[in-house]
Amino acid sequence: MNLEPELTEQLKRVLSSLELLLPKPTAKIDWAVCHAANWRRHSFSGYLESIPSIEGICLDDLLGIDKQKWDVEENTRQFLAGLPANNILLWGTRGTGKSSLVRAMLHSYAPEGLRVIQVDKDDLVHLPDIVDEVKDQPYKYIIFSDDVSFEVGESSYKMLKSALDGSVYAPPDNVIIYVTSNRRHLIPEYESDNRGAMMVEGEIHHGESVEEKISLSGRFGIWVAFHPFSQDQYLEVVKQWVGKLCQKKGAELEWTKEAQDEAILWSQKKGDRSGRIAYQFASSWVGRKLLATTKPVGA
Image 1: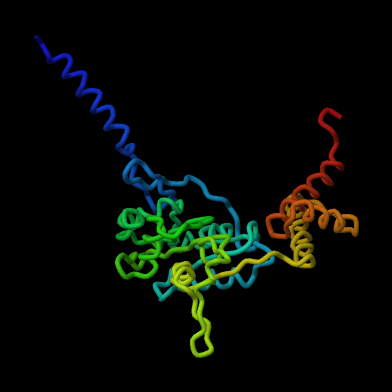
Image 2: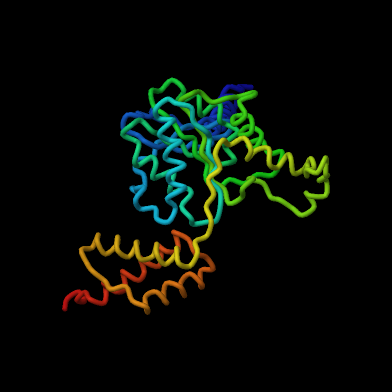
């Protein structure tokens, strides 16, 4: 009985299955022309995939968060200069410009050697592999993870904690970590967490569950908080965006009480006042007003 054809087919099936587990061959990133990359998970590991173009957002486009811009920019400049700098946690309300601020840093400082590697929070367990790819490069890298939230005990939680603490695994000098989250401690907090608190010599000491939850965020050297705008701040940002959008189109629009009331109603319907909401309203309002002054096609 000739088993060779059957054995050959079995080997082909095995090899085909193995190919599915292996990452696709990718060209080595030329960091001289590539300013940003994503870490793409594949089977047991992953690879860096270049991002051909990045959002052209500038620091001047981020309105109403001057203090936050100053804190992040100063730390980033220290990092680029080879001086001591901190990992940063940007936390707070959605739509307030946390991730946009990191992208704006890249847009502003890429000519000075800044690069960004975006990593999904579930892939932070691969931090050692990611860092190995760039540790010998002559550029400065921000490992950026957006919208992060953990449950205690997750493998990515443990790896990030170790990287920030530097006790078991520490990134090289050309790598820093910036994380955004809606939660200050990156982990859900519950009323029951406070049951273990105790008073010692007049000072409140947290219980073990709370201590564990704040231990991760406490490892970030800098916390940058983003809060909802007051109504006056929101309207001021709307007006600034209206001015910027009109300027881009070479147009002028009068800011009226009616426009202000529309902006307030827009934010109430959205249930939020933030830079994102202000930009969305300004885009809608400017677009509608300019469209009304444009002749219809074929007229």
